Image 1 (cartoon, rainbow, N blue to C red):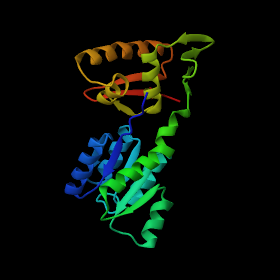
Image 2: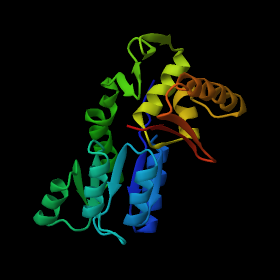
Image 3: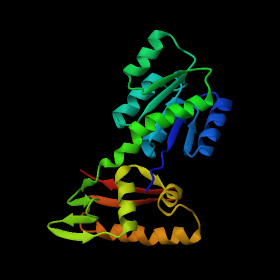
Image 4: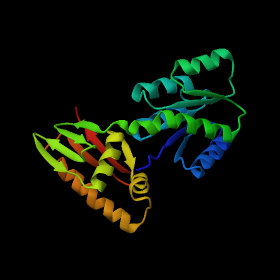
Length: 229
């Protein structure tokens, strides 16, 4: 199953932001645009993102502070700065707060795309090496295609397996319904949506014996696998 990389783009220049967002979507990267730092932080805390592109000069909170807060929440997520502030001190500060790259404005949009691809190959697209997850009293073993609790082993179907991988990837964060459909069924229509509803119900039933685990329905948006430690 190919991983979909979802990007959070933070750019207060509305025109540039919309151009970049449209370009990245066409290139196969689902992209959400935020126009200020505070809005971006709220979205990152409540939605599932795999990659962040941000300017250094933002309203609300500046890009460096935003990057630090994002890294506190998810230390693995790649961050690329795009900025007109290109002094040695500015670039150094970007890498100090956890950036994977720093691109000076003006820049080639094709170059940005190539850098995103390169970073994804060595970071995001390698995270699927993890196959075993501890979920409350359950152990999800993706290699053996099983869910284990108190010595009882439940064999998973391929659809259950794919959905569980997706929800574990974004544990305690929202997975958009459309993203799940595109990633697992590769299309979004009435029939695939109904099919997914069936498997969502099956996954809820799998975890019914542990109240610390809940697959929540986020109305009008998607789902969230909540696992209380």
